Amino acid sequence: MGAGEVGFHLARTLSNQGHLVTVIETNPVKQERIEDELDVFVVGGNGAHPPVLKAAGVEGCDLFMAVSSSDEANLTAALIAKNMGAARTVVRVGVAKEVIADRRLYEEMFGVNLLLSTQLLTTTRILNRIRGHNTVAVEYLAEGKVQLRKIHLHDESPLIKQPMRDLKLPKNSLVVAIYRGDELIIPSGDDIAEPGSDVLILGTTEAIGQAERMLSLGRERIGDVVIAGCGSTGLTVADVLQRLKAKVKIIEAERPRAKQLASRYPSFEVLHGDATDLQFLKAERISGAQTFVALTGGDESNLMACLLAQELEVPQVLALVQRGEASKLWGRLGLHDVFSPRALAYEKVRDYIENNYSANIVSLQRGAAQVLERRLAPASPAAGVTLAEIAAPRGLIVAAVSRGERVFVPRGSDRLEVGDLVILFVREEELDTVRLLFPGRDPS
Image 1 (cartoon, rainbow, N blue to C red):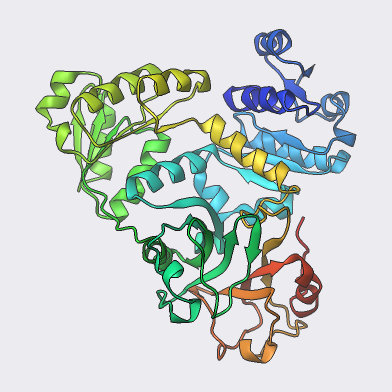
Image 2 (image 1 turned 135 degrees about the vertical axis):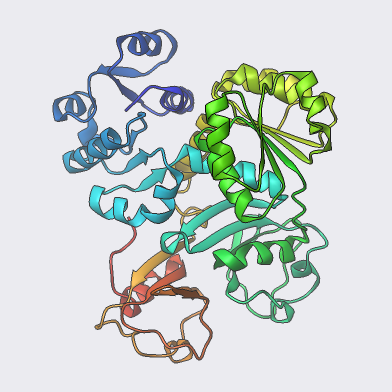
């Protein structure tokens, strides 16, 4: 449902891969474009109305994706579609923080199987580049208080040079899995990762970055950052950089907006000017930046600003591009760090489909493992006992506990309490053990 940039790209790509695709769209102009350019079935109308969903064949579909520009319409349509018989639903929401903080609420109230924020996908990818992280994917848990990151290990990583038992990870962080090719391993104290491996690390928001840098030997040298254009994506990036106490310049073309940004970010240098003006960029010494990020509302402006930043020899140039077809042209011009929200959304949906409809980043071996969240009820056998007393099998890890405002990675002597939100890393063969020790809602 919805044939904007994201929906059109999803429909075209999935259709080209042999999936049977139906597109619901209210705009007659977009309907005509879809019929002319794509091999899909088109239904005109509002996807939040049952007759339209019925005409689209929602009752028998494997996956219903609501990716219009309206969060409310997407959630309503997904709920109706699920009740009409759609096996699974993907819902796009605009605000990144809703995916982080309210994901479980949306999943339970609206029956959403995968909550998708193109803003979150884009800002996460951009911030990883700025910070020099080796993160391949990120999962947010416990209302954003815990992160699960999949990272790539360089040959000099300490995890490749020594066994797990000798690794002194930061407090409240934990290695939960190692990928050796297609094999997913729950590590023991004797395990050593091989060169080229990926690992899954889990930790609190405060500890996860330090743990990643330790494992990947990366040093967080952000350097000076210039942000050209500061819309919703730019604000999210700027908010994180402000928390990291980075040195940032923001270039904003509209004077009233520049004043607002200066008030919001008193530690940043906010410049009123045109990021596509070479003389302006020279005068403001943009050449001294480590990273230049073009996040204006226009692809052409971002392209020009990036080319000028490259001319001024800024080491790292990043850009947001809405129209994916332009990205090939950018590559020919030497601009390779281009982030397209619709392309990132497709990557997420593709992984979801290929991983047997599992939303967790740990299910790249088609469901070999899952991350579950359980609230400990009084009847749970795990309530009131220590981790050591539970004696969980190797394929079940109690990875983190959220208790009120406190979040921690438990050790053997830690006792679980009624009301705790526990985050579990579980191999497929141990799901029955989870149902026994931590009864609750099974994964979708």
